[in-house]
Image (tube, rainbow, N blue to C red):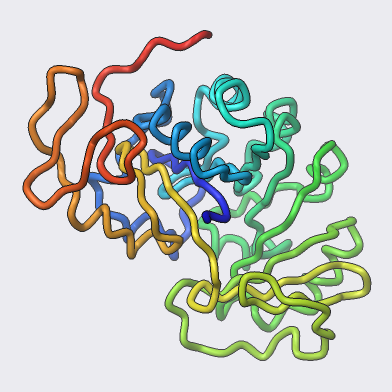
Length: 286
């Protein structure tokens, strides 16, 4: 049973996070797909989602933001048409283009915005830009539930109380405070908030009516499938530990347009987890 399924986009980004997880993904698995419709492996991805009954489908990225994908609305329409009726779609974005693309943003069932600070200096250290998205305006314009995701490190840990207060003030209802992957330092934060539950191995806290989850990737009990921009379907929640990336490398092209495996790879039959790159784009309804 998988908890969710990610569609991973790759290419140039509008933010320059020093801790970007995409830097740890092999380059051959994270090729630019921002102008490719549909993304490589889309139909194998659909087949697996339908077969496994996966409910949560997420548009996200390795080295870029999913709202930079040039066919975002068109792909969302295709997936709603081809996937089972219980599928729910969300976008995990940095929010930079949310207002500009608010009509598309609101076509999802829900959204998550990566947002580490309201302070320009802190935001620049963590996101590589001094242009802080107007989170309050995004929340006002949104017609779908919006969760905020805040990476915590040495730049914003001491400011967490004021960050929580501002989130509450502008109407954030759900916040996830995330430790960086592989982080061993402990932060003196959130200790005074009561634990009201647990989600996938992580504590859920109450902050004056705002739900706050303290997320540790290492402790999280999640299972996901991930469609990398290369077309590889991976089965590890932690992208850097995806076994299919370690054993699946490009090989000779088959007559049907698929790319084969080098020795030691996995099956390329439709819907199998493994290397499923499609070198020619199948025809789909516009």
